[in-house]
Image (cartoon, rainbow, N blue to C red; front, side, top):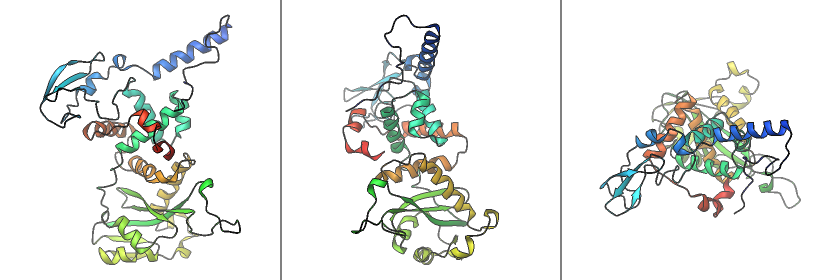
Length: 337
């Protein structure tokens, strides 16, 4: 496992006879780094962590446990009848964390503002490997965020496409790229009722009736009105649910200004989604749905970014999932980012 150099290091580590300017820069940088990387015992977050009482032992799943003093950090320790001790953070994405959750908050805020993980690692002064690791933890936390979304009333539906990475492009025998909506284009179904918006991978190439139906069948309330571009792939969805269909020919919409385009609610989502994905453009497309889940979390209520961070923390404690650093970097999952 290759580690990247710590952001804590300055060019003058271990050197004597520094100039006044070098001393000033080194001190400022190290102070700023320390402020961004507070240890748990110095962060004042123990009270917040202790407010989350575990529902069960993370080792044997028993609900028969009791309080058993405090860790050095001030976090409540529990003892289970199975003989194991644990903390509220055990088995969560914060398991074994030595830094404060406030640093996690800054990381999330950067992502929610569409900052790339590369830029975020510099902003937070984290190693790039740490940023990749935290991103996978965030994917785990919000993995089910779209599962229970059901759109209703008026619903705008349209597909957008995102290309595979350059190294994954499929070429013809003569060396030419496949043209049009081929396997080099990933189809993303986007639907919104202006309250919530769904972003779901439908597969590669042109959408089909079967793919579209299977993708959205559990996310659209039967009897709703579907506003779409008369794409043939929507036919089964309209018939099976059943939906009132209001459709427009794509060619008639192309030259319309946004304010006059009846598909603008979903077109706007397409544009913002592309901006978000382009900030992470080198990622492995096998994990595209992870990025779409994260984008859906950012796009849908609550609106305030701090409220979103609060929701992430709640989900992390209430639906515990964990990923060890050594497991992440020792498996193929590291190649998915």
